[in-house]
Every structure is written in C-alpha cells, then in structure tokens.
Amino acid sequence: QVQLVESGGGLVQTGDSLRLSCAASGRTFSNYHMGWFRQAPGKEREFVAGINRGGMITAYADSVKGRFTISRDDAENAVYLQMSGLKPADTAVYYCAADQDYNEIINNRGIEYWGKGTLVTVSS
Image 1 (cartoon, rainbow, N blue to C red):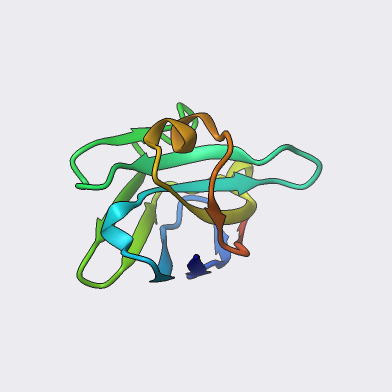
Image 2 (image 1 turned 90 degrees about the horizontal axis):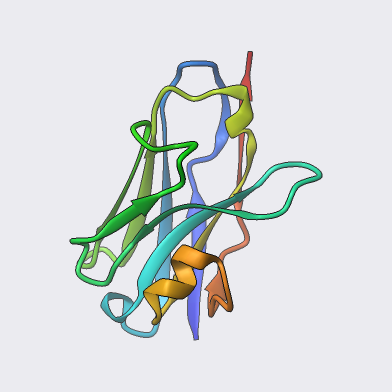
C-alpha cells in the first residue's frame, strides 16, 4: 500500500501562484511514477501533470503547460505541483496519484493509488 496526502490548497486570486505538496508513505516511493489530477465541480477527474520514477520525464495537460511544474524529491518521499498564473478555470480538487506504470498515469487509467485531494479555489 501507498498512502498519499496532499496539502497546500487554498483560496487565491487570478494570477497568483500556489505550490501543492503530496507526501507519500508505505512502499518505496522511488518505485512509483507520480501524477497530479484535478476534478472541477460537475466535471470528470482529469490529468494535470505526470513525472516518471527518475524524475527525468514529465508531461502536462495542454491547459496547464507553461504555467504548472511537477517535481519530486525521493529523499523526502514527496511530489510537488508548482502552479503559477492561476485562473478561475483552475478551480478544482487536486489529487495526487501513484502507479508503477507511467502510461496509466498519463492516460488516467487504472491508477493504483490516490490521495484524498486538496481544494484550490481561484477567484476572479
């Protein structure tokens, strides 16, 4: 089992920055590819960003490319999402996810482990 706990959400204004953190415990963190997803009210949960085991490969949804940056610190068993230029459309619950298959992270399919989420609200 892998336990994931997100933090760092909150209420911000348009254009602000925010950094989300996800603390992992349980199995060896470095064995897992990691991702951030989000779910806005009334919408499906969608892929935001992914990072592979070694941290050398990242991927982003088109809607956040150039504004969000995913990173990981295996020594701290943590993954981060640095968000800048926030827009009201970024308002959502943000979830951290872990999987041993990078394609499952990128395609939001059959993901092994999820956190409970942290709410980000961007006011206009």
